[in-house]
Image 1 (cartoon, helix red, strand yellow):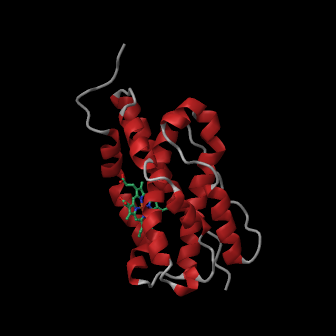
Image 2 (cartoon, protein in one colour):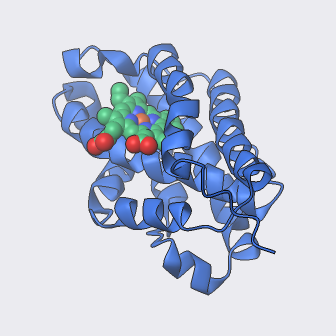
Length: 202
Ligand code: HEM
């Protein structure tokens, strides 16, 4: 039986609508909304990287188990080593090895797709963030910018390919809801990990 509800709008559009306020909240609570003014600080940068690492590590831990190689190709995932570059940046800033943040158990393939929307979407913002942090001497000179450089290297076609693959999934409205919940959980997880980030070494 085809359970696809053709009256539903784009899944990606719905993900965007449902997560927009969480995105704004994250920009405000991390201090990242000050990036364009150049007043974003090193301790704030450290926490933002830590939140990103927590999500990327969780995804990398579960990607191969939850999505087949064919699906990963269809989603155009540029996934490789975002967590390694995040870990490297944090260690540069901390000046010592960093304990890994907790991994977030992603309960299903559909929830993982929601989390991927958040993680891949954040690399889009990452391309802009790189431009801003290059203008903040204490961040630029720290050289802890491997992750945002990796975001810049994500091919421009990756995002439209991912969005198109999401929008072509044959999903019932209940299944779409699981994807959306996966994205909301990913945002909530980043927020909780940022709140628990180790103190920035002074
Ligand atoms: C861990 C933190 C973050 C997460 C999880 C995240 C997530 C996302 C997601 C999911 C999207 C895609 C929205 C869509 O088009 O459907 C996005 C886009 C974007 N984000 Fe973020 N974001 C984060 C941090 C930031 C920060 C700190 C900024 C800047 C202050 C930012 C700026 C942007 C911008 C400008 C876009 C749109 C990029 C474009 O369309 O070219 N993001 N982000």
